[in-house]
Length: 359
Image 1 (tube, rainbow, N blue to C red):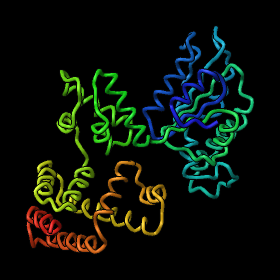
Image 2 (image 1 turned 90 degrees about the vertical axis):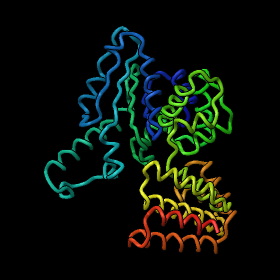
Image 3 (image 1 turned 30 degrees about the horizontal axis):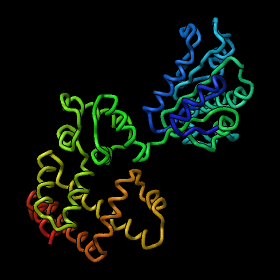
Image 4 (image 1 turned 180 degrees about the vertical axis):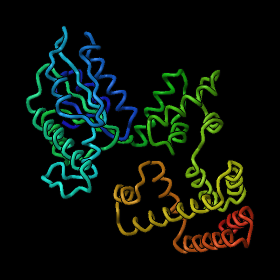
């Protein structure tokens, strides 16, 4: 069985307190939270019935010894393998599922390591088919796993694969709302969308929410001003607002954003490269839309994960034509040349860039 949400995971472990679980993905906060939920299943003598094994250099003997030892005055025992080496290896080298010879490796250490990976991997592939009834085997891995991996395929068929991808924008907004509510704060949807627009994970979100709540300690309702006062909006977010102001021909706002970036100590050439990158994203979104690609395809091609960021790119692409985009690229390249060759001071070059782009 494949599980993709924390809610479904909680439901699953309430009904199935045995078998093999693999918890993996990029949302580390949910992985750690789920591990704690699994640990809570062991209420009787956890010091005896909860065994954690480091996945680094893990071997079949240590797994077998842990699993075959009977639970101590309990009906179940949990064995937790953390970040096993064979997942790391299988992402780089699919030959774990194939036969290979020692001649494929440069030195004897490689051969020994590979043999260890294969031994543990093969053992687990077979062992989970006959896992003792009183054993919960938990394997956690803080990254994505290869879904075509033979072991993962077996887990999907006879156990539970819990895969936490980075949350989509709306899901992250819901988590943010709950975080503020838990801390006794109120916040509107627009402010939540603004806060999460350049946040990609729950860990990152929690840090920002804690900072905001600490700053607005005596305040009930969180506003955009509170968010701006303590959160470090990324350079990407500021560059987006800069380009937005340029497209709207609002030179004053664009110059204020540029001055803010320079005041924060951002490098001139990095600012310029990010401006070029933003124009390139707008160009590609516009081009792919004209080619008939759907939104999901474009997001995958351009590796854009945040729905709000993508929506804003579409809005920007609809507000500018290819002729203006080409002119913007030319002006940016000329600015790059002027800075690198010392024709203009970096500050003056960027100021002139904003003026030219806003014409």
